[in-house]
Image (cartoon, rainbow, N blue to C red; front, side, top):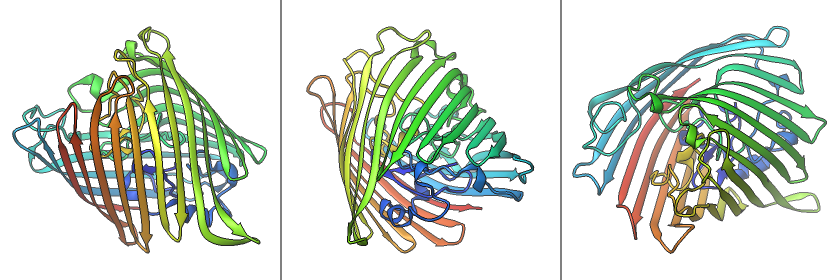
Length: 437
């Protein structure tokens, strides 16, 4: 599967990551790196759909392999709404096995477990410690993935079972890989390539295993029963990809939240060439519009628009970007993305995991730089209501990741949110160490 990370609405492009690596600890390749390597064999242009690279079936691994991933993390949250800060030291382990490919058939099974260390001075969503700020990494053990693959030819790939699903930049459908308990889906996923420029995708979702863990005593936090149909058509030409999509999500666990998204996304990146010689200067562009409306038994008041416009420059390893993302709201209901990788959007302090009823405008600036095995990110956000004159606040985010050895990655990360008209100040810091192979 493809892993994608975001520092705000700007997507950081990365190559296909090992199973289970779809989080900010995986920030190893910037837009500049992808632009430099996008013509390599094995990275076909048609797969650049909104910046997410999906390995075609023909290049799938043919030998069996064991899966092992371990992530140790400490998270500190200082929220002015609480008298005491929260501290969580957690360990996440994943063990699995990927079979060899025989006549196009293969399979994977992966177990995941999370446990806390050194006390539980935080609200995990399951431990009842509501006097502390939330850090949603509860103790948990579950089957994270268990699926069968069938790839009869290089253009077609079918996957059935519990799986990690990533659509485009994960704004609507993602695996929430930042949390220790990953979000996965009981689903059927079919992808097919038409010629050299067009890719079709359809997914049926029957259930989502949420980041709050299968063992969570609150069943509606642990999982949702779904009857969802996702459609995507991506057309790649020149420096960009135009993607049209439709999401028809019937949430059987929360019927009033059932909704439909219809949207169009364009994402492009290119370098400025002089007589065929790369100048070292490049650009990125992303523009998107979607409309959300009620579906199945969804609340009839649902009705809002999503807009994104972002531009960036890439120069000698530096990536600089600016953009605005709007999730509409009318004071009663707002555009929601409940199956997204939410932590990657609208600031790492996670103040807007649920869009306020008045909507959200996120105006942001971002900077990224890679020095060998070290990657740094810096982002600034200004948050305002889409309906009315409310200024929610501002936020600074920063991270440094170090891939100091094969299979190893260390990360230091911080978020500082300063409230204005509503809410409270929040500061968060993380230190993590991960081994994956």
